[in-house]
Length: 77
Image 1 (tube, rainbow, N blue to C red):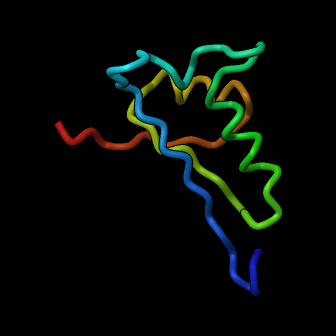
Image 2: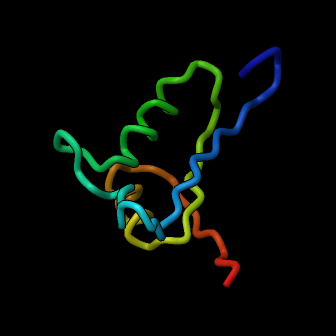
Image 3: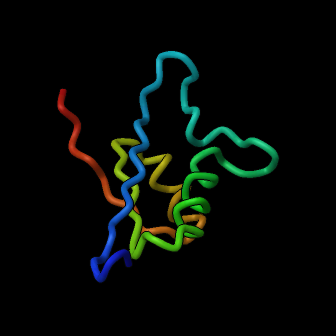
């Protein structure tokens, strides 16, 4: 909460990457890359709630594994 207002954090996590495919779920030092963003958001004293916006079911599965709320973004194909 900041100045009496609730703050929502949003972690955008696209599934398709041209440079490094599946980069958000690649393990770095024993944790998926997306988990570092989740942990950082969780440690923020300003964020009341954080959600992950993703179009990728694997990223969503990782978020669920680390006990995190996630929702599926609609693709703009």
